[in-house]
Length: 249
Image 1 (tube, rainbow, N blue to C red):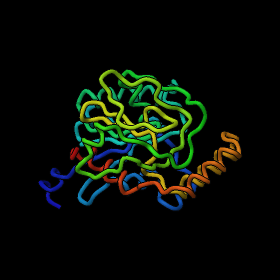
Image 2 (image 1 turned 90 degrees about the vertical axis):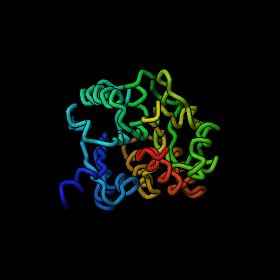
Image 3 (image 1 turned 30 degrees about the vertical axis):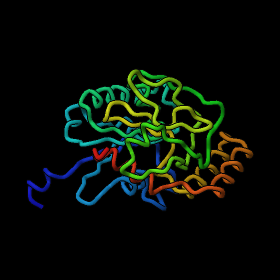
Image 4 (image 1 turned 120 degrees about the vertical axis):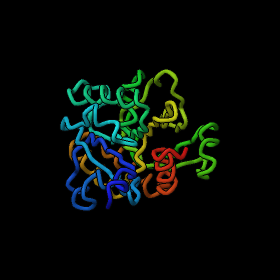
């Protein structure tokens, strides 16, 4: 490939905030590949930074990217681990450069914190398939994508956004969570759910949470029942996330 073609390639970075489970490594090759499978297109370059290990792009490298994706994590976005504080600092820089950023679950929450909002514990876990409802303004914004007004997504969280950053807008809610999605300017979007998850990834995660006594059997049973009852709309989410990240919204 010639130098000119290389320069024309779109370049994205995944800031990986969780360690890969053995299952995801074995079946998918790790969470990075799960995200590239959801969002990547031919001719793009995708890099990974293991943020939870303190690996982040240097400030001077931020300009090389067209967009960033921040993943879920087992950590709390309101925590004070060194890597979390460093990530918050980096996100403020990325925002100042108006780079596209898509935050998923922990990513949604850490963006809230970096931009001046508040996160904290929700009233219990939300695990399984949850139906979220885009706002009128979101449906208008997404009209060209033909996104349905009831949008099932896989969720797995016990923290949530308590207070939006100034100038941010709620663009989706659910019965359990008031801020399922938010938009900040035209360059940042947070999603509380996991558009990248498949049902089998969640089933293995439920078993791990049970083994570690982080959830009770009733939570696990309710989550599994919701997986049987409803399909996450992966195609709609894929369309929405890709369109946002690639600047088509």
